[in-house]
Image (cartoon, rainbow, N blue to C red; front, side):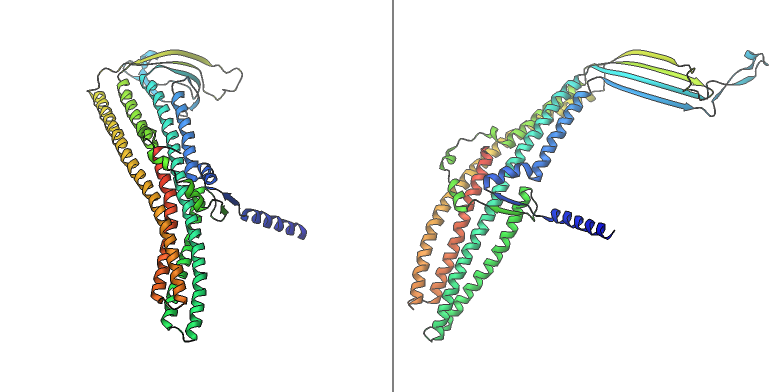
Length: 446
C-alpha cells in the first residue's frame, strides 16, 4: 500500500512538472509574423467568426429545403368534459337536458409532416445576403491579419530597441566608471578639483537610472510581444534579427513612388461589403411585396380507448393524411412596406456616402503615411551622421579632459550629447521599420 502511494505521488509530481515546463521559441521578424497570424488570439477568433458565418450560410440555405417533423402525443382525460343535449332524444321529458360525455379517457396521436417552400422572394435575397455575410467575415480576417502584422512589427522593434539601448548604456556605464576612477585618483593626488569627480558621479547616476529603466522596459516589451504572438508570458523567446539589419531591409526608396489605389485597402473592401448588405436589405423589403408559395404533406395515426391498451396487438389505429398548398399574397399594408423600403433606400445611400468618405480618408492617410516614412528615412540618415559627430566630439573632449585642457562641464555636456544621439539613432531605426509597416498597411502591400 505504501509503495502505491509513493508511485501515485511520483506520477502526480511528474505530471505537474511537465505542465510547468516552459516552451522555447526562436523567431526572426518574418517567422514571428507567420506564427502570429495563426496563433494570435484575435486571429484565432477571426477564424472562428468565418466558421460561424459558414454555418449561418448553410442555416439560411436549409430554410428553403424540405423540412420533416414528427410528433407523438398522448392525452389522459381523467375527467371528460360533458355536454348537454335535449333529453327527449333518449326518450326523456321534453324541455329537459341530459349530460353526455363525448370522447374517451385515453387518446394517442402520431404525426409526420413534410413542408417545402416553393417560392419566396425574401428567401432568394437571404441566400445572396448569406454570401455577403461570409465575405464580410473573410475580409475581417484579412484585416485582423494586417493589424496583427503591424502589431508584431512594432512590438518586435520595441524589444530590439530596448535591447540595443541596454547594450549601449552598459557600454557607456563601463567607460564612464573607468573615467570616474581615473579622475578620482587624479583628484586624490591633488591635480584637479573635486567638482570634476562630482560631475562625473552625477552623469554616472543618470546612466544607471536609465539603464535600470530600459532593462525593465525590455522585459515588459518582450512580454507584450509574447502576448501578441499568442504564446505564454512564461515561455522563452529569442529574437534572431538585429535592429540595424531590419532597418537596412526597410530602406525601400521605391516604395515612396508607389501608386496608391484605395480599392486595394481592406478598409475600403469592408465598407464596400456594407454597401452590398444595405442593397440586399432594400431588395429584401421589396421582395416582401411578392407572393409566397409553400406546400405540405401530413400523415398520421389516431387511437382512442377508455383503457390504456395502445401497446396491445389488437389495438385499432385510424390513419389520416392530407396535402396542402398555401399561397400568401400581400395586398395592402397601409404603406408600411413602402416605408420600410424607403428606409432601406436611405440606409443604402448613407452606405454609399460612407464608402466615398472612406476612399477620401484613405487617400489622405496614404499621403500622411508616405510623408512619415520619407521623414523617418531622412531622420535616420541625419541621426546616423549626428551620432558620428557626437562620438568624435566626445572622444576629443575626453582626451582634453584627461590632459586637463577641458573642464568637467564641457566633457559632461559632450557625453550627454553623445547619449542623446545614440538614443535618437536607435529610435530613428525603429521609426523606419514602423513607418514602412504603416505605409504598407495603407497600400495593401503585405
